[in-house]
Length: 137
Image (cartoon, rainbow, N blue to C red; front, side, top):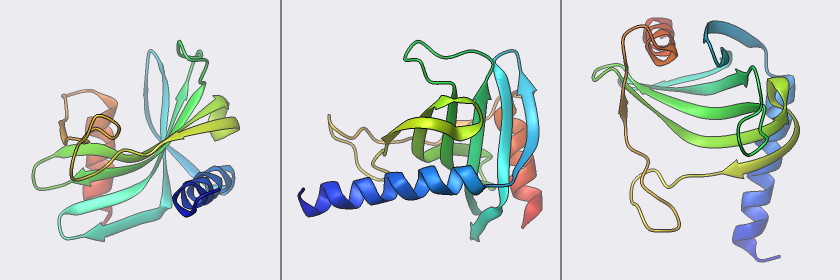
């Protein structure tokens, strides 16, 4: 296994293990599922907050995934958010087998598209998550 694949595998394992031991705090829900954050992972750098978030879906998506764990970033100044690293799980609450998708944060290419900051819509889970993150530190 080449070094870059070995590193990616190690990161996937770490995120899978960390999601199993996370202490999830429910932030909100909608018709599709519930949203949680792991308060212990919250870090601040200027106006940007990063933390681990869990999307626990009521039913599997079309790929068969039942939950999603993401390293999430919030820009408190612009009230925008994005997922920095996403792992999809076959079972609820970040359990089961996983497939990690790790987007490139600063530059895009066909293989690793640029992850853009997304606006928050009033009343949506992202608004509740941004409110939590920006008042936390």
